[in-house]
Length: 170
View 1 (cartoon, rainbow, N blue to C red):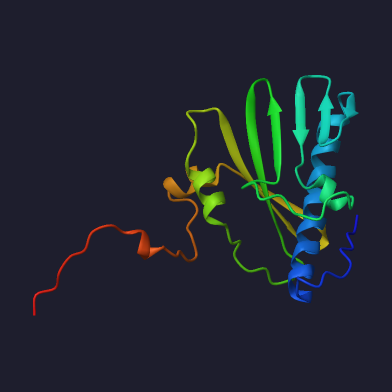
View 2 (cartoon, helix red, strand yellow):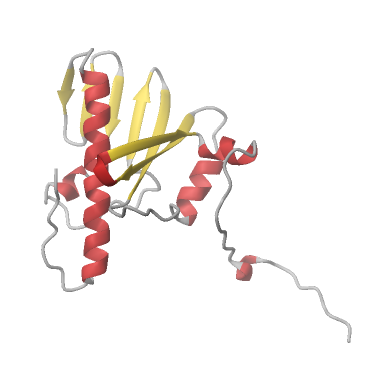
């Protein structure tokens, strides 16, 4: 599925392209999870996702944007919310159209959600969509970082958020 966002006077062509690539990746992940659950179980669609008979609900906040029914992309720190048997998994989709992908970048809210688990009430999963529509799935990236199996490529900090000062004696 391909997305055409049209011309927006407020967005540069680079921004429009980035959003288009992201929406295409989200669409592929949506179709993947839909096939994964619907091949063996019945489903019914609703306005923001689909319900599977076995108690699974997948909601996609950007679905209305993709359909052209909304002019804003969701500001949620995730792209999908999957609830099954009382456990919620949030999926963040990172998409590239480059044959030489760069490291995934995460917003502050995405990092906060990734590392701040609410005592087992949800999981956080990252899906990376690359050239050839390949989907890589990394469940619980925060655990992988904490246990030394995944390393951040770069980090940045808002040093203005530090309270207090340490005087330098000359």
